[in-house]
Amino acid sequence: MPRIRFYGHACFRLEHDGTQVLIDPFLTGNPFVPGMPADMKPTTILVTHGHYDHLGDAVELAKQHGATILATPELAGYCARQGAAAEGAHMGGTARFSWGSAKLVPAFHSSSAGPNLDIYVGNPVGFVVRFFGVTFYHPGDTCLFGDMRLIGESSAIDVVYLPIGGLYTMDMDDALKAVQFLQPRVVIPGHYNTFPAIAVDAAGFKARVEATTSARCVILQPGEAYEVG
Ligand code: NI
Ligand code: MN
Image (cartoon, rainbow, N blue to C red; front, side, top):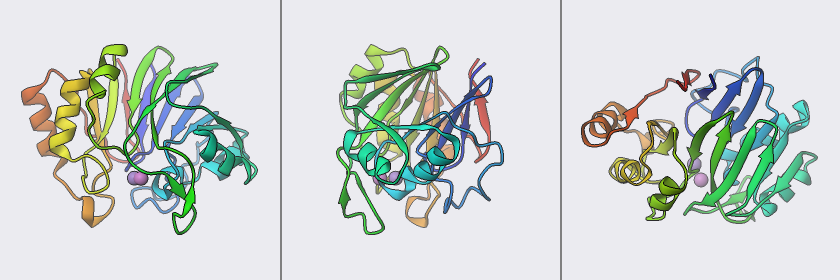
């Protein structure tokens, strides 16, 4: 069965039979990650937006492993100018791969790159990923928005990652509402405790999700994987 591995913050790796799809590969500088995992060998890297805590090591890993980056055309172009193989797509579009597909969906945030975050790289996005039959929704950095209902209606979501730290993204109250809109089987919280400003009680979130929705909330420790049953 496919596995969804969490590296802390918003970095996830989908794994099945030797295929790895990496999402928002913030590994270098990620306080939850002791070093680059030795078994890292992605075939595709999905990047929701240009901020360093999401773009992360995407360019280096793509060059090292011959992986393709999927992002908005502006962010894909930024990566391609640094020598990485990168493919651009826009919201509403679905990119197809040997392992499945990734559809770009809206996210309400900003997207810029560079050390001063002053290089414009298009709109931020989320991804609805079909990976060997499993549907995983990674919303990127976003606030809650009503069209999450539409995303939930359009796809039977097996697993959703939701940011819960607030300040830069939705907070726990809004993430709970997102679970109601999306109706996933499983929710994995993230984007919390990375920095003091986004320190929250994830166990409290889990209790609220499981008391008020039919979803299961799985709190993954960095490095840990959830096997989708
Ligand atoms: Ni961001
Ligand atoms: Mn972020």
